[in-house]
Every structure is written in C-alpha cells, then in structure tokens.
Image 1 (cartoon, rainbow, N blue to C red):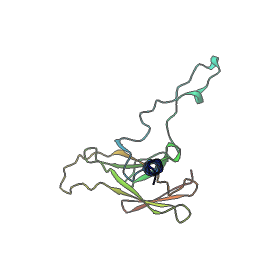
Image 2 (cartoon, rainbow, N blue to C red; image 1 turned 90 degrees about the horizontal axis):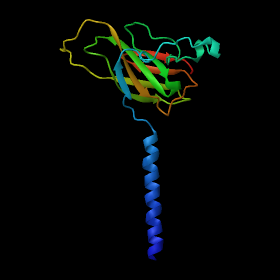
Image 3 (cartoon, rainbow, N blue to C red; image 1 turned 120 degrees about the vertical axis):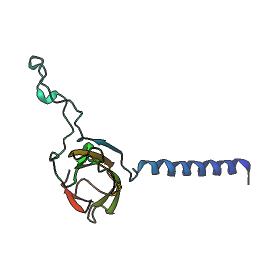
Image 4 (cartoon, one colour; image 1 turned 60 degrees about the vertical axis):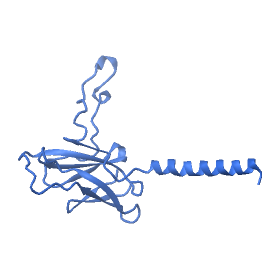
Length: 167
C-alpha cells in the first residue's frame, strides 16, 4: 500500500474518532449543572420603570427567569422547566446548613414513551447536626436529550412524583 493512501486512511480514522468524541460532549451528563442556596432567579434585578418619555415601559426592563408556577414554601420537592426548557430546576426547602441537593438525573422513559426522569439526591449522614431553619435550595440539571418539553414531564424525586406541564 502506498504511503499516501495509508496516511489518508489514518487521517480519516482520526477525523472520525474526533467527531465521535466531540459529538458525545454535546450530550449533557446526568450530573447536576449547578446548585445554590435560595430560589432560581432571585439575584435578578426587579423590573423597573424606564423613562416613559423615551417610549419605554416596564416590559422593557430586566425580568426574572420565572417560567410557570412560582416556587412556594413546601415540604415537597418542586421541579420546573428553566432556561427555556434547556434545564430543570429542583427546589427543596429544608435546613440551610444541611441542604437537600440533587446529585444526578436519569431518564426512565424517553419522549413518546412516558417522558419520565428520576432525580437522585445526595445522601446526608443521619447523625449530622443541622439548623432548624426552613429555606430553599436549588439544583439545576441540563434537560436530558431523550425527553421533550412538548409533552408533560414526570419527575420522580424523594419518593414523590412531580408533573411538569408542557413548556
């Protein structure tokens, strides 16, 4: 075999392998993307009235990321679409010193087959000493590519089922 043909084949194989690795990086992992104390979007500035003489109104001002029902103080976990459906926000109220944090998300049934995911939580030691306050903690997950926002999404978390309506 001529060296140029061999070099061409090696180059083609290298390009194919690189493509596989790059495309697999596009699929988000099942790990939490971010977690933080408080509700999502709390740090957003409240809408302010801009100069009406300049033709602006309150709708021109910065708005929070609220996408659907607001999160309310509850003993049950709450889940909502976030970032235009690109993420899922899990909010759990509890102790600020021992927050309930989402660990991973996995698809149980894909789009068209039930559209169902499960969120696993970080297990905390039973003998851990925690404050008695009741505050929200948020964990954001990338929405798995196997589910869709155009069907209700069923989320299993902490022994509960939460149904998120169509986005």
